[in-house]
Length: 303
Image 1 (tube, rainbow, N blue to C red):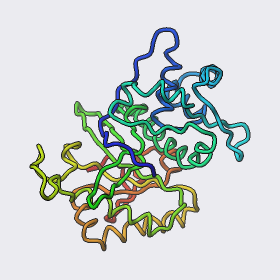
Image 2 (cartoon, rainbow, N blue to C red; image 1 turned 180 degrees about the horizontal axis):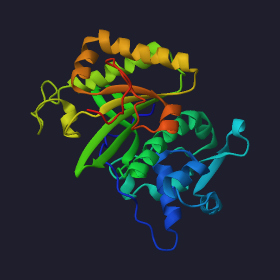
Image 3 (tube, one colour; image 1 turned 135 degrees about the vertical axis):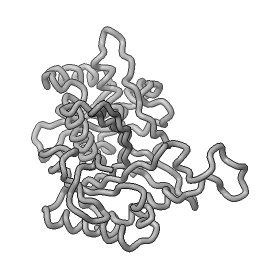
Image 4 (cartoon, rainbow, N blue to C red; image 1 turned 180 degrees about the vertical axis):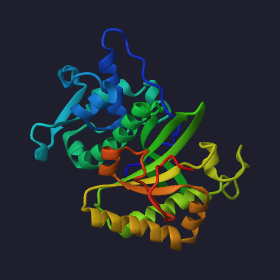
């Protein structure tokens, strides 16, 4: 994964002029999410609108030299859209990207290499966003920040596929939740996947005060600079048979049980894994998440 700046705050929707507001939103969404299909952009920005509406906007952006597309060979005529270099420059100062250096995909080659993983990450976001819309919770396009990176010491960093901000509402209460999301397409070994838990545990325990440096404004773990509580860690798995995905969840549970740093993280931070297709079929707030500390499946929003 590509490192990005530490920018955990949810972004506001970009301001668009009256002439082409949807075009500005599409550009901002591509800058935020790197890659997306026409259908994904419709579900993201105009869930009640037509596919043709988004297609017309994308065609115009392509004619203006601001966006380009590559084809998914296995999906017939499905196009995956990304910003051109001109489009990326145009979005560089959007409020939605404030505080984050741009990491756009601006070439056909880069888009082809990143497409499978990037589209899986967008699928995960849409599962949360559509479930939130149905329940009256708050989670939208700008509450999902891809590739958020934090230092964990020794010159190393942990980079989450996405940082999610989510507000659950109900009973007169508002619960503000955050989660680091890792999307796994079964392209690495189960051991390497489970080792990512060690990086999150290192971030959890990483001291904000490097030796020999002046005292930072906040004492304690470094993550307190950005989060009032440490974000949950959610693994979303896809790309293999159900038995193989269950084996990978078992690898994550074994790491949680046997690694002392990860076990310490799990005492204070909810850790869970789920299958992407289950999120899409049932919804993320259903009991489809396997706690990495053991026990029956539960909703991700449970304490």
